[in-house]
Image (cartoon, rainbow, N blue to C red; front, side, top):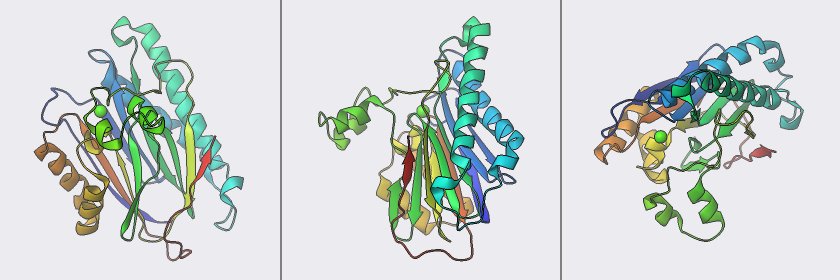
Length: 266
Ligand code: CA
């Protein structure tokens, strides 16, 4: 599958430094957003180690990414376990670094990563950074937030609207590197020509409704999408660092399903 992409990060309007990191590796067709947290220098260090380690590990494991033809089923692919292992390696690397340096103690990061192969889009996810799929006139959130407010929504304790304004909305329930091991969600879907994937940190998702993201994606050239989304998040107050990657799948043809079926593991 061919793909085109654009990515941008911005400190926002309220923070004095940017703890988000992102990576676009066009050769591997790997895209990662990481939103770090913890201590003075910890957040930025954690998110940087995450994107660097994931990229390095996947380059080392390139052979495992050379998947069977597009006709092979999603479940047979070795890619999900490969990207899971890369995020686990990042977790170990961040944890080890934090043990060495008291100033970095307790650091961690979210990770949302996308890897494209011949026909599929694979995601590895920890925390509350998000992946969206824009297909035609629809937007679908692919990742499920590992956050306190999402747990509260699922338990019926609060509504999504209340979650948006909750004082607890920044609390995540899983992070990469805070502990030595982390449970990584891995998902895959069959991509279609024209699919646009948006990876973003919560500095975007907390400021814009999904429908607003959809409208901007549909109205913008691919290269303009990150800038326009970040501009709107900043107009709304720019409470947090904001990172956006937009990736468009440009394969020749594909099945005609309108809604992607997402295979999740575990
Ligand atoms: Ca954030």
